[in-house]
Image 1 (cartoon, rainbow, N blue to C red):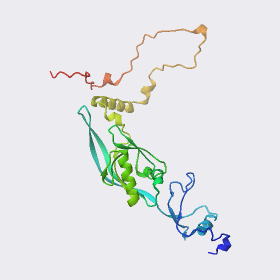
Image 2: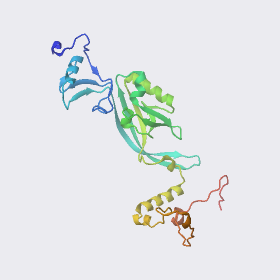
Image 3: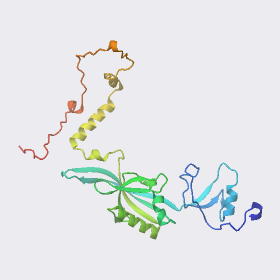
Image 4: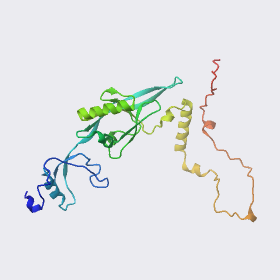
Length: 274
């Protein structure tokens, strides 16, 4: 290509790989291309210098086929589904169904100060002092396969129990190998609230039956209930009156019609064995 025809000087021309340094979150390349990716070709025209790239980008077109080499990407492999046993202080055992899988995050060229921005991973401790995913960045590598509530068990086959250990093994692996592998435990049912699992068994059973009854109840039954608030009524001082209704209106609750009764317990006192 003749550089004089394009009006570009070789003094500023960069010969070599062309890397992406910024992605507009509202542009067409958002979530398709990422910072650090290398542009190999556009519309089957290979990119080896800045002049060629600038000449192609100045062409007016509504569609372009861009071939990239990923600098950072993530992939996962499911291992199995299992049941996790949780032991409480009251010597009760709770069962939780979890999916076990490994997530491998690759980043070839990454500066140490860019690790947090690229991964976009925020960690917190759960009620049992385990490492839990608190949040992930909207366009980060962690958001591809990790979800809030997932538990991190291992980093490159090393068990981790603190944020310091997690950061050390991840930083060390990224610098030496360019990737990090995480062992993740994820709830099978993401809609399960963790506090509900810690409720007594009798309370959970009664609540589940009440929810099932409400879901199957006909919509007409809800309209039969008497409204407490009345609208479009005159509140003039001369017509104010108070009347007492002798009709009794009862609203059933779960403990009234459910045959399952709550167990009696006295805090600090043992129940009689007789």
